[in-house]
Amino acid sequence: MEDAIAKTPVTGSTIKEDSGAKLEELQETVESLKNQIKEMHSRLLEAAVLNNKYVQTIQEYQKQIEQLKKPPLFICSVVELLGDMVLLRQHGSNQEIITKIPDDIEPAIENGARVAVTGNLAIVKVLSKSADVRARVMELIEAPDVDYNMIGGLRKQIDEVIETLELPLTNPELFIEVGIEPPHGILLYGPPGTGKTLIAKAVAHRAKATFIRMSGTELVQKYIGEGAHLVRDVFDIAREKAPSIVFIDEIDAVGSRRTYDGTTGSSEVNRTMVQLLAELDGFDKRGDVKIVAATNRIDLLDPALLRPGRFDRIIEIPLPDAEGRKEIFKIHSRNMKLEKVDFEEFLEMTEGLSGADLKAIVTEAGMFVIRRKGKAVTMQDFKDAYTKMIIKESKEDATGMFV
Image (cartoon, rainbow, N blue to C red; front, side, top):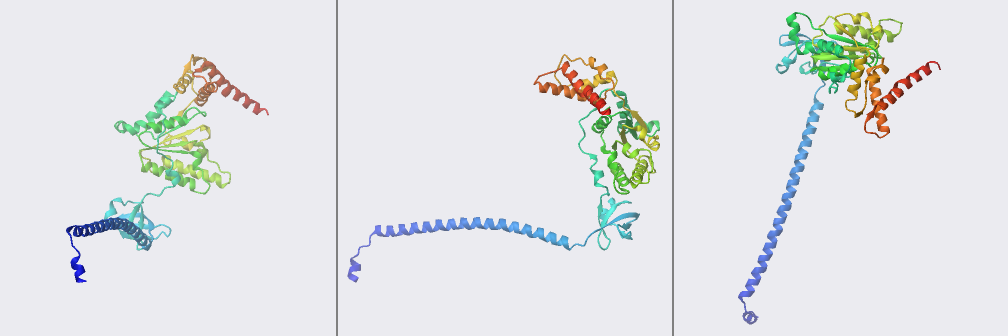
């Protein structure tokens, strides 16, 4: 045995082969370990991301738990300020208490303000003024794209509107210098379609003031006191966001002569109108709140609504005259391709028509061009439109009267 081992030759090449195999094995092991480290690193990152997500979720749950543990808050109204103390009246129970005003909210506390208090009646927050959501949505956010140059035949009336509404807001020093109180409101009246609402849209476009629009029918509510409460809220918002302009369309729906037929509906309309009268010119000053109202039936309005102080200017918006009709035709056809059209021929034919009627004729003339796939509006298109929109409708109305 020893002789056999002694006879086996050990060469340098055999040692190199063994060391090379071990080296390859070690390299493979190192590569495997590197891959394992990379995999563990990626898993660690995933675990860190999940951990952050779980931490955020836990924090949200903790906030919710803390919120649920808090006692409910009660609403009180500030009755009187007493130095660093305040007299509060709790809503619902009408219980009155005196408590200290926190230093951080002392500048925001004023008489009549609403505050949130804890169970031990400590003030924690000043709330916004209470107002009906129906009143808040009446505020116009985007002004209409209607300007005074888009209204024809009413230059004199527009000048009066500018003088009454815009001048006191843009140049109040003129009225102070003369020593007079600026006008606060205007009433626009006239036949339907003459441009009353169009003027209000132009005022909203031009005025650098909060514009609040509503219809008289919106003020007539089902339940007792709701209409008066809505009127009060609208004017509260107007005073809060002054300078402001309040536009009341179809005011005859709520401002007609006061009568009583024994029904609750009649008394509710009267109650709403009395509140409107008080807001227009009552004991409290209106401030920089201007009023614009429109109606087709001024003869139905209550005399108390028409007296000076409530509406300083009562402006008639009449049917357009010949020059006004020509101007309206040009305004509504300014973007049209016209072919030998002379509006002078229409001035006598369209006597007694409103601006809305003239706009309908222009629009229908354009529709005739579209129907025949033409490129320009001709005089015949306007004549056909007049026949269809005015003469035909007049005949139908006359026929309906004798049916």
